Length: 455
Image (cartoon, rainbow, N blue to C red):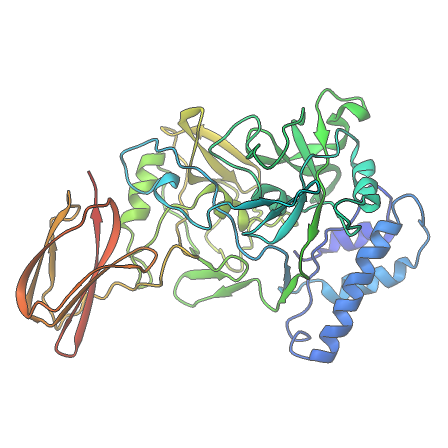
């Protein structure tokens, strides 16, 4: 996350309640020099320590030092990666016969381990979490709590950012939207992050027990005179964060790759607002930039491209030039209200839900661990036909010339069928529903087509 002008001005007058985010950007031109990078990593560590010291204890530290460091990092795209991979939502409940919903894909399935010392390790992100949250408190005390926490033999606990907090939610569960086999259920309605709403230092990004993320006033919690319970859950880095010189890459074909998640996105969403079912079908049928394995993103994937330092829209328009402040469908349903689905609003980046019959926009995604980078190639040198498509299980492959080799792979790239038919006509049975890629080699020509198997 980068620092904008407003944040630089705000941090020139630091107060204990306003801790800067834990991720700092470093200009990509500096990132090419190892000596400077080592120096800036040290600066980043020092900033983290100074930020914690400022929490009501040392208010008059060298603010100029911090301003200089933030100025170095401002307006750059480099980013520290604290999560190794983006976890799946955990949603396994099917809510529609239309292919492409969240439950149809299993991407970086959540996998936690109990360490037996009050901590939980997320093996997908490689973050370690406090098993039982620290209870209800104001944001200032939440920051101090994490600073002073000793748990599991560790003292380097910190308040998580909102993307890290969102990563441990399970969207197949409600109240709380968390796996209580690993995270102790408490009375919490919300959990604090270390990020403030852009242009409003009185609001903090939080996750909630229902499965969402949003910006809430500090005064809503009971300890501040409010009516709601905002708790704290500390996190720590099992291994040091990795510095990526670039967050996003413009692929030059109307797509953008997020290097934090290795997901590739459309830069321009659907031209019209559509229903949830229409969004699933649109993504599934999409052939764009040479690829046909597009899908509607789940809510964690969609929220991952939100930038809390931006607003109206809260998406980086340098790399998503067609995204405006609007509402965008995810493939994730509400498990207890299956007529509704989660969406991302891009004024600030709040996740919420709507009836699936309402009309929102769709922004499609591909890649990650799910896709094997399979590119559909409809070669003009071969007259390849695959039918019926969709199929109930049996597909027929016809080709003008003899098929030397036939390979069928699933979305993860696993081989499910292979033969050397030496024929122009072959039939194959596929038992499991899903999307597959049929690839044939005929002479020196290779052709690939996407098929769908459904009940």
